[in-house]
Length: 83
Image 1 (cartoon, one colour):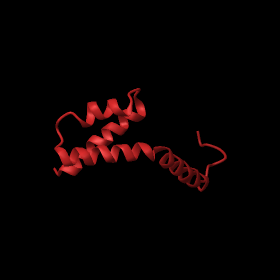
Image 2: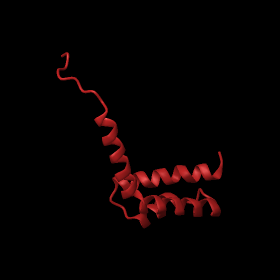
Image 3: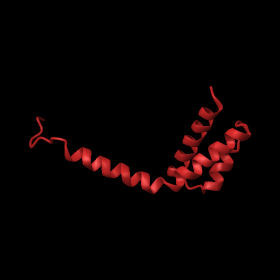
């Protein structure tokens, strides 16, 4: 498995922990990214990716919500359910 892929996997774990947990960004970086399993360049890549993802998280959520509203407005919802 490539190092960058391992770095992205660690970032996904860190983003999940950030979204659901009560830890700060620094605590998550320390516990998930700085656990010693990533080499220097990969660790730098993972840290940058995590920081930028958290920075843009609100904008990403907003864009996803708009797309979801657009999608659900095109669904045909029946007036009566068969059960």
